[in-house]
Length: 324
Ligand code: FES
Image (cartoon, rainbow, N blue to C red; front, side):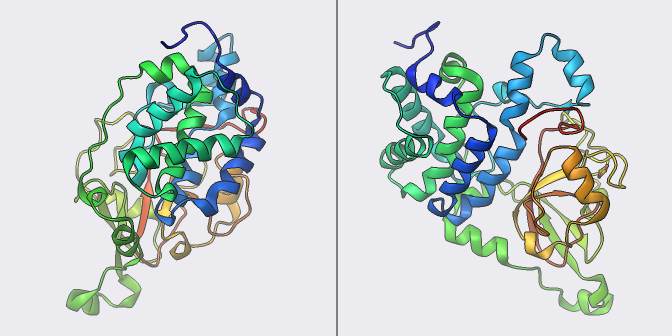
């Protein structure tokens, strides 16, 4: 029986930790997370920041907060409990993760430490899913953070959409990694175009065989997205030029931010206005030249890359959120 009004010992424990502690816990788990999941785990924490969830939960006027932070799109994890991690290999283990977390929470036993709690969930989910713990660790971290942000009642009563392995997600982790590393051959047409006009695939949805567009070498990813004439306008964001939402194209609005699942090393360095805007938006605080979060209107590629597109954009840091 799931307690409706009671806060469980696990929930109380999870709320004791601030954003920085959660980020350190995620970082410390990275070596134990399979490579196929590692960047996805880092990206997810940027897509669903705890500071934003707490600010919304504490806001007297959510609409006013949304205006202050210039939030656009669906930023609410509570609406995406079973789907926010669709781009994880471990998405297929979500039912096991969810079951393990609910069992742990309702048993009302306290956790000793954050990473220990996540490891325990990963171990149980991996056993139930008959897989290696390293493949369940990232999705377990996501699950525990999701419980922290939405609470047990919402977590346990979310519809529980089942994973639908399709496309690349049917493949083994090593096959996925090999596919991500490969660059498109240029062929005879490439020879005629010349090396300066080489073309590369930008995959934005590994679950679809057609979830990609073509980018020309050393031009912004948004240029490639704009050349994709398929209709993306039914989505929740401003997708009027291909799959990547875009507005200013000059690193001023933050609309085009993306996570880089693979190929970050093939993208141009973050510098200048891109670095400043990533910080102002609160998307990224590191000074890495090749981070896993980029602005697609500034990132230029020299090979195939795999990205994931968030469901919202906004100015969190400039808007005043703490602890990003
Ligand atoms: S489109 Fe505005 S920052 Fe990239």
